[in-house]
Image (cartoon, rainbow, N blue to C red; front, top):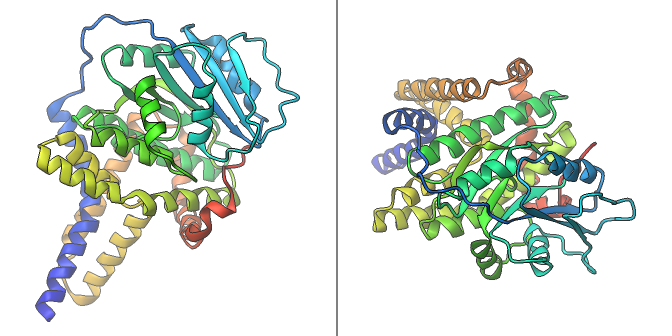
Amino acid sequence: MAEAVHIVWIILQIAFGFHLFFPLFLFLLSKVKGKTTPSKEAVKQLDFAVIITAYEETINLHDVVDAFSQQRYENYTIYLVADKCDVSQLHFDNPRVNVLVPPQTIGSNTGSHAYAFEHFKQKHDVVTIIDSDNIIDKNYLFALNQCLSQGFKAVQGLRAAKNLDSDYARLDAARDIYYHYYDGELLYNVGSSATLSGSAMAFDVNLYSDFLSKCKVSGAGFDKVLQAFLVQQDIRIAFCKKAVLLDQKTSNASTLVKQRSRWINTWFKYFKYGFTLLFKGLSHFSFNQLLFGLVLLRPPLFIFLILSLLALVINIVLGLNVWLWVAGFVAFIVAFFIALASADTDKRIYSALAKIPKFVFYQVLSLTKVRVANKISVATKHEK
């Protein structure tokens, strides 16, 4: 019996500890493989359908749409789906903007996307997804077009922080930098797929239409279902670092708890796709599916760090080997700062790192609200 418990404990430690070493492993592997180099195919002028989804709020929509007037790329049409919104103050000079008001509340991202598809003015090549608080860089569509012209059917852009007005926002930004570097840029560079982030995404229009027809997603987490749908077909999701979108970061504790409870809920709901992709990768000898499946099985950052710390404490108490755990935490910390250094990170983010324990506390609090996450709120409330 004691031997069986010991074996189980070893397996559990490997399951937790693997994720401490994985980021540094990705970093080293990317140095061996080098960056993914684009093909030399001619750049096409793709026709973009830009879908902007809004739920209840319109406070930022004029800024969101106005950013398109600065675009280097002009072959696009905007479909602004104002779900359960008062649109009386929404007036745009840009003739490419189509404001769509569903007759009944939709209450889901994919539902709003499908509604936009039903109202397309013409046949488009590509669809890109934007949230109601996002501001795109002037090169956003141009960069996506460059990447998609190389033959990719799915692309994730870079979501940078729009605001750093509180420690919560700065730590939220640090988290995004970490994930974009390892789960986006490096995962793609070593031959797998970038994970999807809910916006700043672009897809072949027929491929996304196929997803909408086959996958009905309610509540948060459509991006989790979408990325699994794509990689199960062994479609690589490219990462386009030059397609920059500014995203509103969480500025207060109340919003953080509600937002994170929904995000954690989606991990528990959809992490099973990791097993599916892992087995597909092994059976099909697909590095893309295998590595992506491992990433999907990783718990949210604060959960696996807490579990790893707990495992270290248990080993100390039981007098077991702790040096691998110490090495794991050192490897993770080094990898975390490599990510921050790669992004020319704002000094305010570095100064906010001392508040990580408080940030983690509120995420633990959000864990207690996971069961009622989708009842707390449908979407994050935004500020101007």
